[in-house]
Length: 338
Image 1 (tube, rainbow, N blue to C red):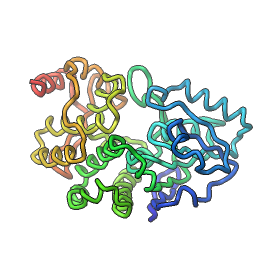
Image 2 (cartoon, one colour):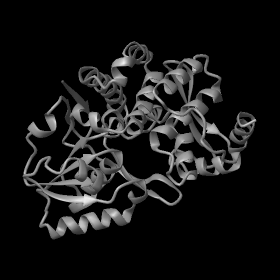
Image 3 (cartoon, rainbow, N blue to C red):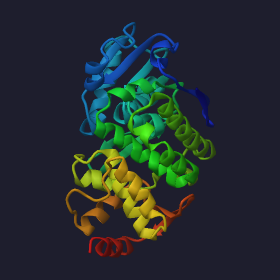
């Protein structure tokens, strides 16, 4: 199964097929970049390439890691003809993409996503970046890969939590496109059993949704912001938890807050699906409304003293509100927390 992402920079294929990670013809010379978890799980994947291993986790998605990686590439003799092959989840993809954008002022790179979250969301569209102490992805660029190679077999090795984290992004897409929501409800059992043909269809449908939005607005001037549904709240929850709340869980909870903000009529239907996929709909511990507002104010989409919120009015009808004041948001959170 093959999909295409078309942008102003370039068009590139998304290959969604079992075994594709081993059969794809990457350009050479190339270096594989992965984290320790991927190295432990797939030590023999693409053995013909040199390999650089990054430290695990969101806490290491920082500029210091990018500098270390660039120095390591120089020591390996890499130059502008070298391609990077990023194997891993969203954190690895963000860092490899950012490194490819800035190393030697730009080298080619490939995504080989190993998590559902990366396959349906973060590997598509060229967003790259690292975190600062004040928030997520505050330094980054838009830099498209040469190709995305999604092998659904990777999903069979994910923990239950890792798998459900990816489903949060899937359900976010389903709020944007209600036909996907109905399809997920009809195929819930096969998804939970990780039936490979169903997962292949699931990835493909999500790639189509995201690719269409990216093609219309590559640099997130407006329409692409729709993909941030649940994320302004979610990123704040991640930051306040010191990243102990995984991204997918934070998005699921953020989606609940966003639906409550507009009193979306079908919010119970979405909440039911989140719970059926073992995703939380409430924070595991309370944060003060003021702390949440402060964290949200450092979100990269804010404009002056206004916070940008992506809010669902109905399934399939989502609005970008760039006029939300901290005071208004504080009142909503105080009411929501009771």
